Length: 202
Image 1 (spheres, rainbow, N blue to C red):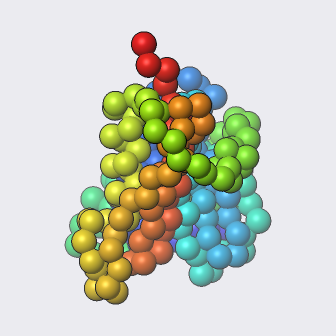
Image 2: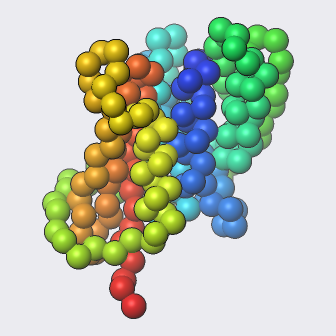
């Protein structure tokens, strides 16, 4: 079983998912990966924010769900891209290997830990509809990071070769409901969906 990424997808994925990986809560340090026949989704949450990145796939059997340590995933993807340099090689995430996940570019192989941590149920939060209301307050750092993470997926805010603008969409601004941030890229085919909980003003 495998997931295939281009180097551009790998960099966008690592930078886009990293901010939502908890640095202190062990049960929230993992990234959940779900595969289907057409895409793979990577989801992370630290309890205050939630990032989900969707990457299109063409050769996946699909139907699998597993978790890996998020810090290892991001570090290994970025190290693999750096090792490839300007080469034109895909990065393959090979799983279903008895507790480990292999990441390879065809020349070097790295292993990361597949965890048995039960990932929080996030579907209801991600699928919630939106309404907009003024007056919501958000953590300054988290707000900047979620928009930046979405930007890693969408690319620069200008028209690309397809004539489409690479933009980040912010919706559901409400003082007591999660804010949703979405972005997508027609170049890499990737999609970003982030959720950030509001904070009470002191």
